[in-house]
Length: 168
Image (cartoon, rainbow, N blue to C red; front, side, top):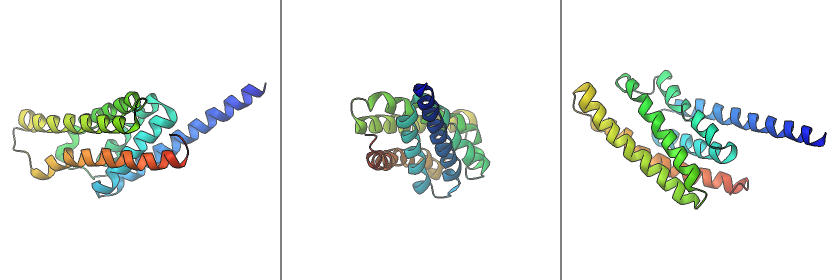
């Protein structure tokens, strides 16, 4: 009977952690400065993956982009690009999940670099094929180098937090 109580307590704790991180992923994208909000979003994605596993990391990968879109922080021209941003978050989380077992920093690096490459190539193709317009430098920066910075800094923030709570 003791195991049932412990299981319930563990499940309630996991649900609480999920909801707390979900709340963070809903609020943080509302900050207009991507150099601030991006690393925090990625840190939360890394943290949820460590705490609750790959499934939760994938599920929550949908939230930040949708919040930024609905909050009016993404230019309207970028709305059709949202699925690519979501896929890039999932790629980052999946790579991080598997590679971090060998080495945390290698997981952050692999996830961040592949996310960066996927978004860089996707944004170029998106504008060339679907909009037939030249891409503005601001959008290229927002969807390429800022994403690499955000992923790597998010890894640093997550590491500090995870070290503090003794999860790594």
